[in-house]
Image (tube, rainbow, N blue to C red):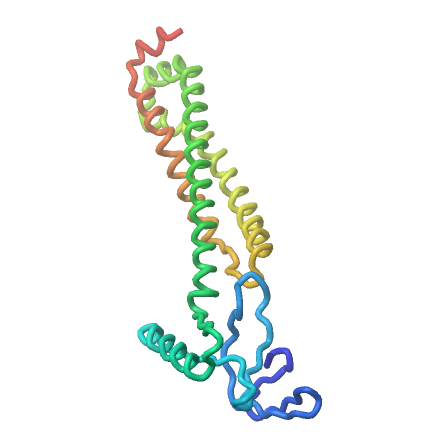
Length: 233
């Protein structure tokens, strides 16, 4: 509300309410979600009202005192208004608690999809490497006979695949940041914007998975007896 009015220091400012009632600002609280985290944070004004016109009572308490405060409200409410049940709810549970549960479910869902995608990608990469090694069996045997080391053969076979995976990871990281930002903007008005770390972590994980999934196959082929490789049909 202070931002809407353009107040750098709202204390002491005057507000006209319902045309003829004027109030003086005596304090300010941080922005907060009133009823949910899915929309915008609306401006809010708290004002003192006559006791005969009260419709809501707000209390700030600590987590340790929360239960005692709730019991006190229900007790006093029952004494003052006996013909209507009390409606006491906690902002931390009713508003933020629901948001945490939904966010947790969203994270679990996308984590599951990410794991499935990585596993399928590793299987596909392993298959491509196996086919590549099978078609280059004699070449590997000839290189080994001519003195190529296991490290050299492994690097030679791994390099094209790691380059492809690296390019795909960079493209996927950039597109992932864009799509994630677009998705979160469609759900929440205010959210954390994915940064470079959000892309670097999965890129490193994907490269490690790719390296582990193909290195074993390549090393076994490089260690194979060159006589067997040259006889391979």
